[in-house]
Image 1 (cartoon, rainbow, N blue to C red):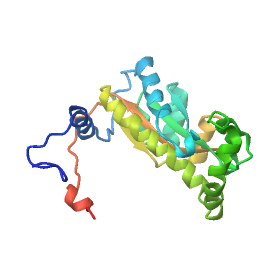
Image 2 (spheres, one colour):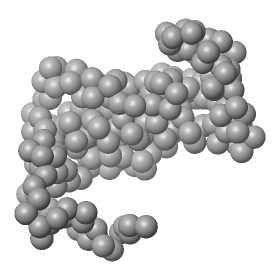
Image 3 (spheres, rainbow, N blue to C red):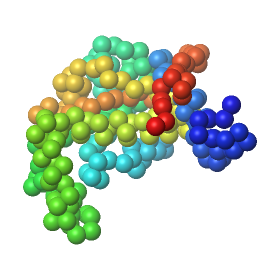
Image 4 (cartoon, helix red, strand yellow):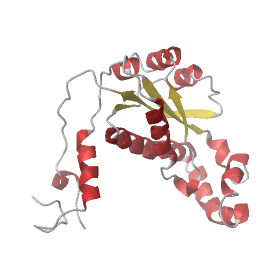
Amino acid sequence: MAPRGQSPGEELPAGARAFLRLMDDRYACKLFDPSKVVPRALVDYLIECIRLSPSSFGLEHSRVIAAVEPGIRAALARSSGGQDPVATAPLVLVLLAPRAGAYAPDSDFVRARAERFPGGLPAFEADYEGYYELLRREGRLEHWARAQSYIALANAMTGAAAAGLDSCAIEGFAETEALAALDLDPTEWMACVMAAFGYRAEARRGRFRLTADEMSELR
């Protein structure tokens, strides 16, 4: 059956078909082989997937720490209640974002980002200030900043599948404990989300997804 919006006999571009195969192949791996180290070139590749991801206003909110040292990985596993993906993965990426104060239009963080754009800070502020005030009034600044990390992590996880790596996103962790494991100040940083990467030590499990008709509609 042709995907919704695609006429019978109409074929998706080759790149789109390849991307959907990657999406279909990726699943949440729960048990990794800790003896199979992720090569440094692939660690750098995952960081590049994150670096090239879009972010609101181009602020590049996310900082990523690639935890490969056993002691740090063990501390991150404890912060997650000992979850198997974190405890067994040879690589854990932690995506961080600055706290709300960093996003004020006159902050050093915003100034450094804005000055890269055509017109510099004055041109940037003209677009940014109203949006910032809306988020500030609604108390959504930190939620907005955290959300940028999820966009970046999704790209890294799909990128991992393209490189033959398995992955598992982890939200269930004690944030203050994770920040302590990374020696970061919780008044300055948020640990938004982490993900385990490596090579599976389990049989690939089946996956369950709603059909397109069940989870979407065209209007």
